[in-house]
Amino acid sequence: MAHGQNAIGPLYSPYGGDAFSGGPDTDAEWFAPVDFDFDNRPIGKGGGYFFRFDKLNWAILGEHTTIGDKSVTVLSENIFPGNAGDLGAPPPQYQIINGLQSVPPDAEFGWGERYEFGYSKASHNGSSGWMVGIIDGPEVTSETTFGFGPGVNGFGSVHVNFKTSDGYLLGFRDYQVQTINGSNFVTGQNPVIIGPGGDPNGLITSDGIADDINGNAIPVFFFFGVDADASGDIGDDEVTGNGVDFGDLHEFNIRFDTLLVRNNTQTRGVEVMKTHVLSNRHLQSTRQGNRWELAYGVRFLRMTDDFLFRGDGDLLGLTQVNMSTENQIVGPQVRAKWSTQRGRWNASVDGRFVFGYNVQDLDQTGDIGQNLLPGGLNSLLHGQPTTFSYSRQANDFSPLVELRAETSYQISRAIALNLGYTAIFVDNITRASQVVEYSLPNMGILPAGQQELFINGVNFGFDVVY
Image (tube, rainbow, N blue to C red):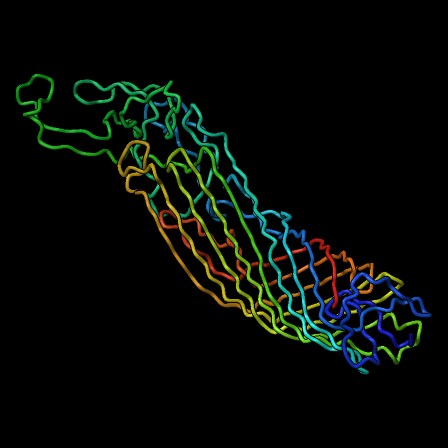
């Protein structure tokens, strides 16, 4: 065997080629034992058609998110508003922030597959050919549920702050038991009973009368007239009008008994490359186990991201928002690879760069406030149940960088086993969890293309050349 014989390589032209053959060696002796030359380099197949399969176990790093608007803080509900007859001053309300400051998507591992096939032809100047690569997956899902669930006090445990218009969170509450005399005046109030969600076990009930927040002894809904018969009471035939005491309006906090957060991310892609393995005949015999491979072509990567939060209980009832983004990245790709052969073992480092053009589709659907009854007790004065569906498209330059570090072991003239590490970084993409606008009652979509994607993990598989 001449010292110019190419050594095994795990990709594209997996088993090198005979520099003097001028064409592929396509015998089907896949399990023929490995022969070695005088420099202890394996005499591999001389080019031809090749196929590679890798099983992927990759983690897609997520960007933790806050459920709720980060810029909004509210005061806790004023359960005991001060009245003129009080002694002393009540303590100040405390400030409520979003309870879920850092939640999934998280860095989860998922399984996928990578297929590569093509053709390599040897010549006096090295070898050249073409390669097609397909990535299917991985798909990773993370899901977490927060909150105590329905409580006997009626108050939910998961606080979420939304942007709202002035007055949106105002309504009439029924947290206290009250006594009303025959003239429709409040004569007494008992302290707290339950919160807006009510008692799910039915052990405690409210009195169905809106609380007298401003302490003026007038109920929220009242009537007036003239006591013409001087009976001390206004009869039905003496009523001249009715009114609403808007001084009894109360500002609610938004909480949920339970809140589920789920994220699903999936990647798929394809690349087509023209490959060139540089000749190493000019190198010293001891260094002819090293070689360089250059390639160019085009690549497409599709990443879908779905983010869902679903809350239930307390003031709004069932509230859910599903945000979906699809990043479709396409562009020219260049590649450089270095490999070295030592006996049956081959090690390589492979780098790729894509000048990606990213077309992003953003879709949002949801339902807000299943339990809202406008003007009802322990509900919002004006808030109504709302269903919505929005879409948006954006375009960005999204460069992609991929690095592979791999080793392979040649078990026969045509078959090798592979083990490696892959890392992929993409800039200027859209992650679903980061573009939810927490604004009631209509929610919304924030600007796209301001996040990053990092995927990494191990791969293992085999090469076959024919």
